[in-house]
Length: 218
Image 1 (cartoon, rainbow, N blue to C red):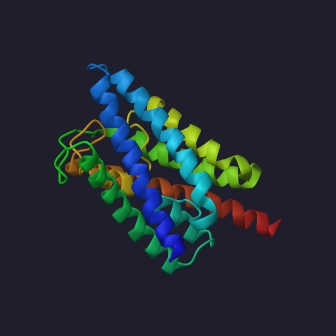
Image 2: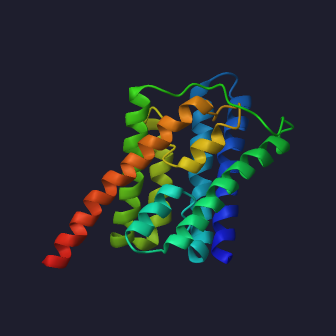
Image 3: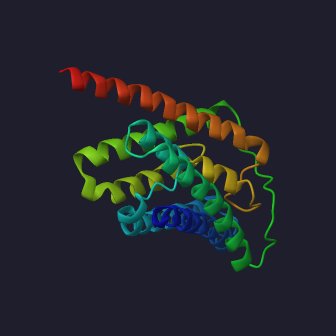
């Protein structure tokens, strides 16, 4: 239960940081989207680093159903924990968005009108998820003590070098469809994001399991 609570509140706080910094950046940028994105990306990277450092010893600090799925498939967690983590992550993400609306005096329940669709966006989200999973996997092997920084810096950079702004997280995609703010995504576009993220996870697992099998043979 302690692990599920860690994933729930960790994901909720992550979405509060993403949504809140997006709102604040958009409000203070005087209509300059580059300034808004800069504030959004820096706050997200910094907050994610703190959350990973503090909650990794408790739950592993996944905050992402795709990360939990890969962890289960590689034999690091059991199916029951995967299901519990996923429920905690999705519900926590939605709560985080709703709390942010309360903090900024907005309607608690919203629907985003921000269109994020097209081949470039979907490919971007596929590559974003593949990159994130690879950084986590390689970081755990090569430099586990620096993994929080590696993940945080990857996400911060991802805001800028991908057209999808590096969601790489089905729970984040769903929750951001419930906020009509700077970080929102139209509900009609969520399926494309989640499909691209799941496809990336499948490709990553095919490669990772093949390397694992080859290593076992040798």
